[in-house]
Image (cartoon, rainbow, N blue to C red; front, side):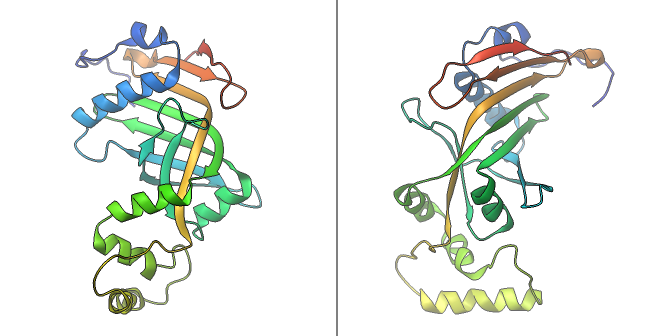
Length: 218
């Protein structure tokens, strides 16, 4: 990121406002709403970091599909994937993960660390039903993260699945579901000139516990 000073072009909460926030979820939702208005595409894109059995880290981009309501006992960030993929296997084994949202148009970043749990089957079914038909067929056709002998093998798998479900509803594959990351730490970062950025971290011991807040040096 550049050291050159930039004009104040952001009309939403500035440094003093977000440093005064009492809890992180409302602040995230305010920043996310601004990102949806300003980002050219995929404001819900996020980096998901996990580790494999040896402790080697993995990171990939995917899309946030929901933030739980305030009354949810494990309130967190929800996304969906193939449970047999590399990330699915790693998340189920470690039950810990990290997220990073970077909204370049707003020069903001949010980092999340927390505990991983599965969504309910009802939640996964409800979301799967909203996906485009082609995406639902693709969930059956793709053996995500497994070796692929050729592009043709994947393209051949799609019509085979389509023949199985030519009309009507397409059920959710048993190996496809959702994850929820319930945060124990959320850090908000705002770009400032000459790398004198604003950083505010919220931390707690676990779900349902009160949040502590601390400014951090950039």
